[in-house]
Image (cartoon, rainbow, N blue to C red; front, side, top):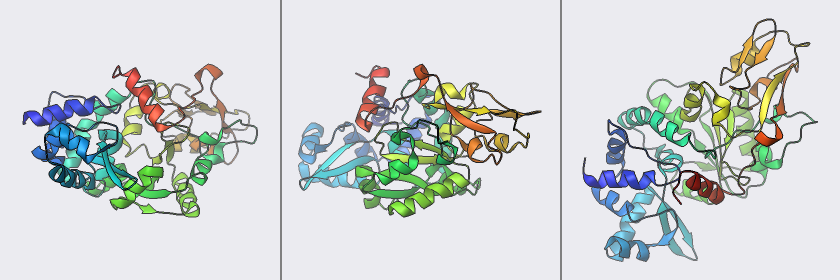
Length: 351
């Protein structure tokens, strides 16, 4: 591989999302599939801060017109992020995940998917080392009882209702599994994107703008199919992902760990009322982390439970529910996405 791709890999690894090296060099193959050599060279001059074309062109030693045209093309391909302010085009570096990879949902090939699936375990392992994750887990509303103290930022419906712009996009994890002939049949349009990110998605045809009512309908449809709610890890998130343990790279890798509860930012755990439990096994069947086992009654392994609430939402006898974790272990997300990534960067020693 050319040195420029190694430099770009290192540049991406210095973002909060990371892009760790491997012995096989699969991460370089991915970059080679996505970036031309010229695009890779220009990408080295972008950082996670919006800048005008003139500043980037000067840093890259290019004329403004050439740089502007290339930056627009790279943004269209989902390799970098475009925004505008007062009529001025601004560009910034995109992380690989969450970022560049998700923007490829309409550009997937079997070869790219195979490379990503080979690389994903390394990427997930790298991201799992920080206390602050890019996503958090919140309970489905059907699992929230009247006596539970749940904040607005832990309620998906409330997060959706607060948005002025919502784009509903396909889940790249289920999309890639469908392409490879391994689809699970669960809903595809399950990624909610808000704010500035919604405009970026819309401009690139990655998703479609929906009303609050349409978004809530999609939310409840996903919950009915047993999808886990994972909003961005901030009180004011820019997205909500609805994930399944069969396709989602994050959940799949967490599930493979002995202690999934230690790898997520969540504030709830499932508990069983053994007196009313009928051992019907519905909770065990729907649990995405295999945290529930059933003998005479259901039992929850607290080290595996991530507090998604799917078990409680599907128990017709109300024999399993959620309770808050110990106060010291409750997760209070950063106030916004910028703070989230600043925290991750500090935890990684990037600043």
